[in-house]
Length: 225
Length: 166
Image 1 (tube, helix red, strand yellow):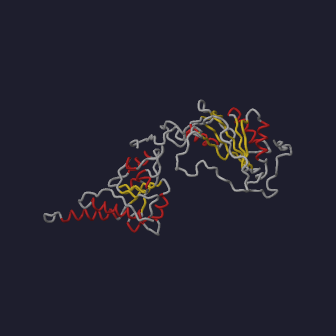
Image 2: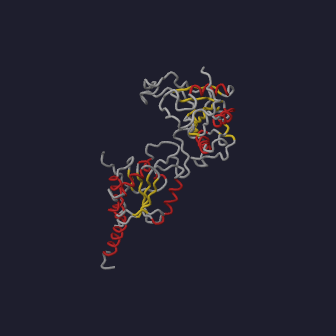
Image 3: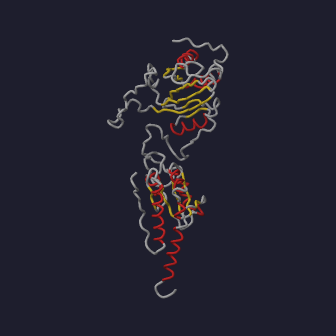
């Protein structure tokens, strides 16, 4: 376990001093190295971080939902991180993940591990979902100052699908959270106006849940076809 | 009027049909990628104005033909129905692209499986998207249908043009 980087030096690298390295290098352009970022968060929030891994220069941490806002506020406001850009906010339904074998012949390459180019170390592939929870809310953050990315995952149980809203921190979370509510039925506590954004008001259910029948129709007018 | 064979009136009907089929005011109800092919058809290379249909009206009350161009979702369906109802008679509907004909490759919670479940369709133009030649062929078929309706004949059934293989 690498020691956390020294954050007392006053805000990491200064933007624009040197050409930023690109590609799958260990240090993806200033800020904190992905592995160190994982360790930093695990050391800072031992109660919150369930799991973490870094792969191809991308860091992922899985955080308990009670601590999501706390961790997110730290990520946004810490001078060494400054994750000020909420790039994406979405969700995953793991209902059937790993439970149904793929249909024979449907996707010939399905299940075969894709070999990455040899220049990219493939030592730590995705280990799979960190918990047995059905849903995961996925937050993609980016630091415009340090050119640093981070993925935060929050396991959400089916029995109580509710997560604290991130709209107080990033206003752009508003429509993302409405879309997640619309498609997956995960509520966001503290959201200013949590109503459907894509489907119509009369729609019942959440169509991107894996147990929503693919052929189910709820037309506003016309026959059910 | 002249003689007993209704010579003038029958030819007047044919003349009205001839006028109508060459002065189509179309309403392009463009929702998706087929709109690019619609634009290609409307522009100078294919020049839909050669067939008298080069004058899109963006008010349904001034339009004769409703071009439904692109996927129609269940959320959009009431809007399409209202647009159709706002058009004055005589009016015709062209289903442009396979999504409007049958739903296309969409088979999900969101998509209407063919607009003929909502409104009557005169000409179906399949293709994903249809080439401008397909569109022009469908337009000519619609013109034949308009002419036939004004020649005292019963309108031919809606036709599907299968198009050249590309």
